[in-house]
Length: 257
Image (cartoon, rainbow, N blue to C red):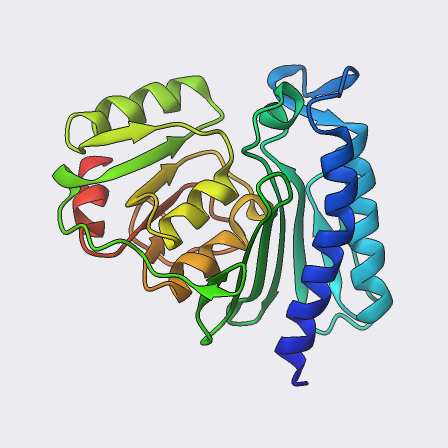
């Protein structure tokens, strides 16, 4: 087994192990906290538990790798090999609390060239999105491809936001052009849906690296395109993303200027 295969195998193992906890508490959370006194940004004890479990699993196998999670931040190695894991224990926490089955676990490994391995797992719908750089994207082991829609005017997609004013502006610009637009409140899954051809595009602001680190590789390996709002490649410091099937990407960029 080559190293990327092993990285992917352990990422899937970590996600599925934590998926059992994820399912057990879904829709049953009564006690949660607000981050930075923001009622739209919530965290639960399950977020914390899952992140700890995933980090522990990865660290056991790759003790020299660095790990970044949404809730606890960096866990670094003294050696600093250049491999960085990005973990979102529950992407779509508000959905998870409400009992809406659009939430997932997101795990990505990046090296000096960007995303190398990706796993986005929705235990509620039993969906495992996976990708390795240069080896295609898969859903439950079956290869996936982006849609074939050729124009933004005929596209069905979604948007995301944290800051309300940004959401209002984005929606107003996009709804004037595209066929239909939705907001599903889980960035990783919506990005993966572009890779699977369910959505033709996904546009969002106000993200952090753990929100998109895995899912962007799914889209790229499925034949799509992902950039920031200026059309540049995404980095660890990017905050806005545009994911599409690649056929009308420039149209989107012009629309959201």
